[in-house]
Length: 582
Ligand SMILES: [Zn+2]
Image (cartoon, rainbow, N blue to C red; front, top):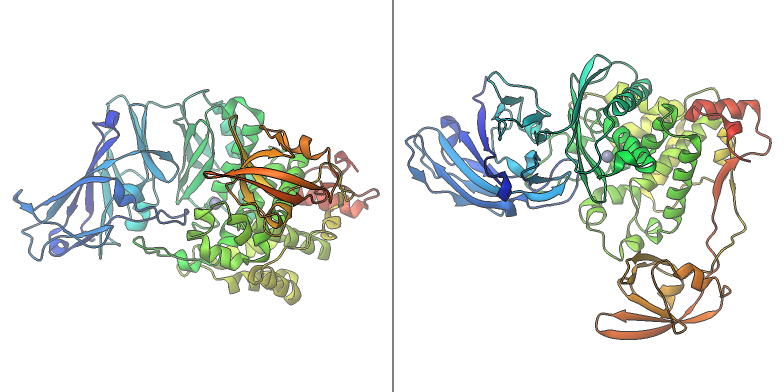
């Protein structure tokens, strides 16, 4: 067996957000070794330059003599051409950035994201990587996504990819150990604020796991699953790992029914990644490079389909009411309609350009990009409904997803877009595969108008009511109302307003937080208004011709759904169609 790369993690200066890590470079690799810190972490496709958090770095040989480290680009170092025995490299990290993709260490806890923490040795990707991590202080506990190693307080990664895909949490934290489907699951809460209801989380986890297993069939594809959940004032998100996930939710999530519903969806999303992404892997992401971007054109499946099922499966599991599922789908549809970029960027491009668009959004983003999560989930919705219309007694997109899993799950070569289209063709025919290809390759919207009838639904609210619109997205606070985005070719754009303009007044009347709709409802569509904004140091007034009210469309029940449609609805989401209002 190859010599393990051994690390040591020193957490004794947590109060100052400092982490000291050292790594032994085996003798056979030490001479001239290139040591690399990733610039990104799998699942979050943007260059984060984690090396900026390194405060100091130094190397010694086996005698303890200092050896000079040479910088090799922004994120790598080289040991010199001659090193006596094994080398030891030690670095200090500043870790004070709480997110699911960055390190955060303080007196309360220590969340370590491996990509941001561990240098690795080029050429030693297949060596085992061993992390001794004794708890500090001693009454804290270490929670690791890696399995335990041969020595006490040690965790063992089979190779470098495994290490980079396995986060750590340390603290005296509320947690839950529970067996689900014969597999140990751990949930850890490092948020401040209200404690989670652990028995309820155990029940949620069991229901989510069952719904996911029913989707893909067979056993759970891991022998352990760990959820590290942190909480901050606002925000939320998750990052999938091979055998677990890191989540972030607002601190009062478990005291708030709406946030609890979002938590269940987020947990479902990351749990689905156990299959989709982590074991059914886009071919480009099978063995990614960590010192530069690794592009994939399949994020519309990896994230889009996962996003579709993270709403559908909680409904099937009884954790969401069907009305919530419909509300969420129609909100995603409304958001996508209000994204001019959907007509400029295809889903394939959106996947490829995630690094420079999705993860680098600015005020112009809605005009130039589409969201492979939301838009991807709507394409999944359309395919699902078309398949259910073809075969009302069938399982729609579930059958395609399971076929893709059966054909390419655990495949060391991963899957390609052609494999997805082939699975669609097998289940739904060549025409549906061709339509899928068009949806992915060309900019534009899916067609959701007629297809919802397959599960007994229709769209309501064609006659738009409400206030005329400016065609902007707002960012509001108590002190300012900002045009976060001005949508291309919509009224404010045509009037010459820009994203980041600060909205001050309409026809001389000031606009405060939450007031815009009420102010505009005094006007008719087609009327001109004088919009005053502050753009940096300039004060500007532009004339804008108001657009018609935006349609507020809802998914409701067909007036007279057939018994077949009622059965299809139940098969689709597990709910009763007659409980949805017509
Ligand atoms: Zn995801």
